[in-house]
Length: 278
Ligand SMILES: [Cu+2]
Image (cartoon, rainbow, N blue to C red):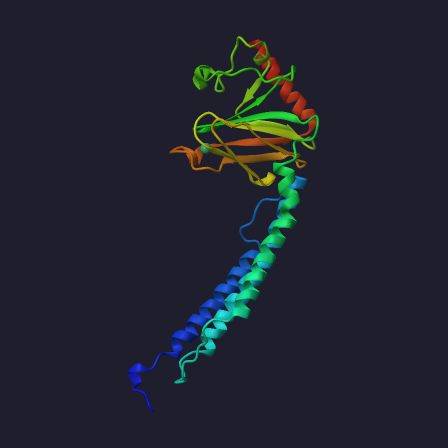
């Protein structure tokens, strides 16, 4: 039976859609392969592990993405309107079982691969002798505190918090161990040495994020969260707040300066001298 021309679908639409899918796939693959927008290089062993995990995930999901998009484009192209009869089948248990199993194996497998890096960051403590560095977020600034020569962080009291009078963390002057605590709006850490972060916040949830360290950790009210890293490449790295924390969120940033151990010692001495002169 001949159909009226008005009922005929358009082969042009299917052809266009298939072509667009093909171009979309090629452009997407190019953006990833050419690394047009990419992370800055990692500066720690941990960062390298994260990158390896990222690449594994990207390759697997990338292959699935390309096959799925090309398969879709091919199906659209081959089934374009040529006056043929529509044919379809309803469900296929074997195929559903296969792709569900494949997805499970892929996700569990990636999880097992990444388990080591995850455990290293979240379950294992810092190496012995790590430099302790307290990080405090507040709307909309970061402050860093070093324990000073006595190796002890002094007591803080919320009612003493006063950034305008030079006490952004509310150090308690009656506590002797607080006297030598060094507070700085930027961080200095020695290259090649383990650093233990003690991440806190004075108000809402913030997030400590340094791209080059591949570390991101929320600062949660009422908690002190430990993270650790060992940065080996000297440089100045931006610390951005990665949690939308209020109107000034966009400007809540600081810097982590990774310097040679000698430079670090000098910086620390200068800070302590400045403290004594106060
Ligand atoms: Cu914030």
